[in-house]
Amino acid sequence: MERKTKLTAEEGKQELVITREFDLPLELLFKAYEDPEIVEQWMGTKVLKLENHAHGGWQYETSDPKGNVVFRANGVIHDFVPEQRITRTFEMENTPFPVQLEFFEFESLSPSTSRLVMKIVYKSVADRDQMLKLPFAQGINMAHNKLQEVVNKLK
Image (cartoon, rainbow, N blue to C red; front, top):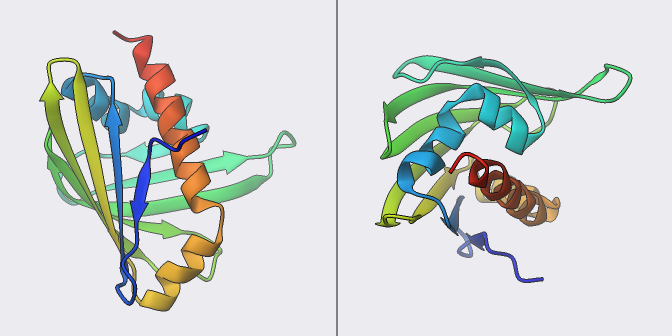
């Protein structure tokens, strides 16, 4: 099956560009990133904090069936312009990966379609390349597929 979410990683650069077109109007795509209840549904994680404004913070965690936390991530929201962009940091807790900087840009393509372009800047090329060794591309594509499925129900 073709991955609808495209990753571009230029050789020797410490950034990654992720692009996905959705069969969703812009306002619904953006809502999937700002509404904690929707985020929890498509990401399959618990939203502990989501402060959608400049200098706001966010924190997500995922637990196994026994209640043990298996993943926790957090960051600071630096810029938040509804239906246009979100700029934030992203830190996975208890991993060797350093903090990364993420730029999310939302664009309307038509009344019923939209595009998300995510630019992620890593501390080093080596950090970016290490992330790409994980099943990262598959995971983000699956998450975006789930986002499309969950938000389709809101139409």
